[in-house]
Amino acid sequence: QKEVEQNSGPLSVPEGAIASLNCTYSDRGSQSFFWYRQYSGKSPELIMSIYSNGDKEDGRFTAQLNKASQYVSLLIRDSQPSDSATYHCAVTQSGAGSYQLTFGKGTKLSVIP
Amino acid sequence: NAGVMQNPRHLVRRRGQEARLRCSPMKGHSHVYWYRQLPEEGLKFMVYLQKENIIDESGMPKERFSAEFPKEGPSILRIQQVVRGDSAAYFCASSRGQSGNQPQHFGDGTRLSIL
Image 1 (cartoon, helix red, strand yellow):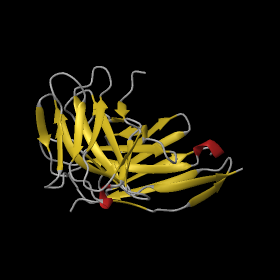
Image 2 (image 1 turned 135 degrees about the horizontal axis):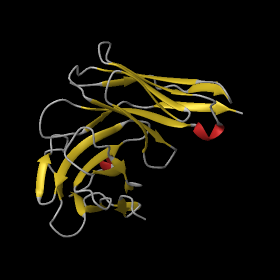
Image 3 (image 1 turned 180 degrees about the vertical axis):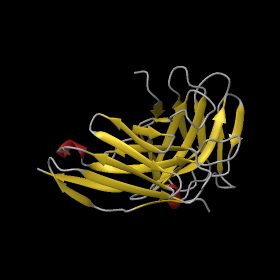
Image 4 (image 1 turned 60 degrees about the horizontal axis):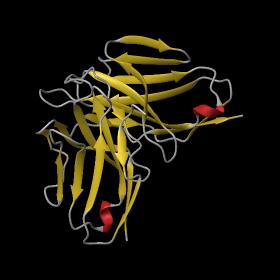
């Protein structure tokens, strides 16, 4: 069973702090990694994608990937109350023909004003 | 709105009825995925389709569930003889191409409630 694990939280951080969200995956052949943000009652929104080891920055967001450790993280700098949401780590499985996403259960983030 | 369009947004059915959920992919996208989300849970893959083809249905329950993506019109997820356990949010996603590097973009989902 290929799995993606996240701490369910809730993770509470004060406004302006760095929020650190972590994710591990079991399929060593996984190739593509995504972070989706989901507000309550809304659809998942893609905020970051990363495909190779290292860091990828986009505004206040930084994704980090370490394939040797099977670990991917998302850092949110200068956290804002509007960042309060559930963040899902998603991974495409290895193998030909299908690029389904395997999701973690999500980490609920609360940014306290 | 050029995003993924799903309808209806909310659907209420009684046990034993049929539910039909529709999804139109983003313009220029020809790959459609269906996911199911139970309350406080992550999204679970159900089926992956291209026009007129089911590519991967490994996440679909063996009975009562079916999906199609005809040459013309939206993709349809059909649930026959619904039961209480089918209550969930059903999300459709689309991508441009057949590659793990092509991000999937999600619609607003259909919230299915079974009475």
